[in-house]
Length: 142
Image (cartoon, rainbow, N blue to C red; front, side, top):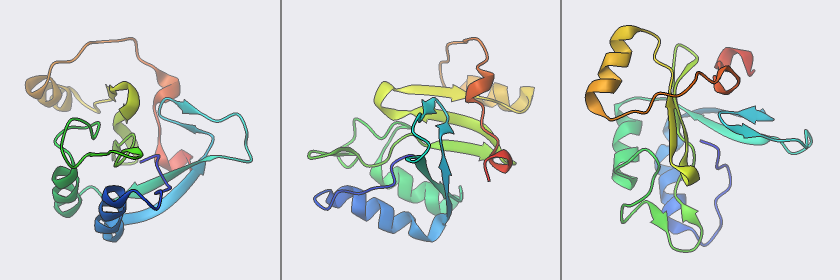
């Protein structure tokens, strides 16, 4: 997730971050992330990396009922906005699904036709041209 800071007056975001703490596996500092670019290399994005498992899934679903963390009573803090930003999921270090929360953008990069079918069965998607510059491989980021 791209939000690495939690304003002191954002109690909901603090609770969410505290609950996910045991699932965090590290942080990544980069000037390019899914649909984000930073021109000032002295101020890179700070990306928090978490394990995707049943425990983290339960926490995420407690704070939001959608991928963008919007439109749910616990998902938006009235003072500062989203509880979490720009959740991305990876499979074998390759981006599987990437979001831009504030714009409600979600891109999928299914590794196989079978995975594509699962996405197509469970949501409506609009096909767009492949954006290779937005595809992230974690092993190339470290």
